[in-house]
Length: 128
Image (cartoon, rainbow, N blue to C red; front, side, top):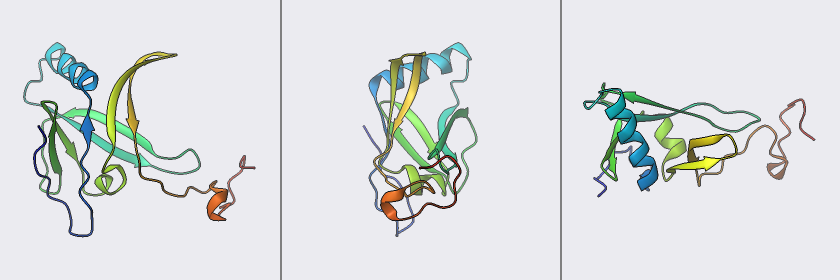
């Protein structure tokens, strides 16, 4: 069950979804580290030619400006800047070529310096 989210009026609410496999992985981490009072913090740490860099951590500090979401029994914290970029995203836990890992599927499309479809080459080296 997802709870209502408080976002700035200019931000359309689409929410962040934690899949059941991701929720199970987070619960296992919380239990293994004995951090029952922690939530999953998701944030964007930068963008550029390679796109968004996402971060996740277990955090017990809820800031006044955080958006707090509950999805599949997991409490999720997102700061006021990151929510603009990851609102509507889904977090999954998948078994990939390098082993199991969290995967963020972000439906938001933002032009990067290498996005030639927007006519923006941005002077990035290595972009052709």
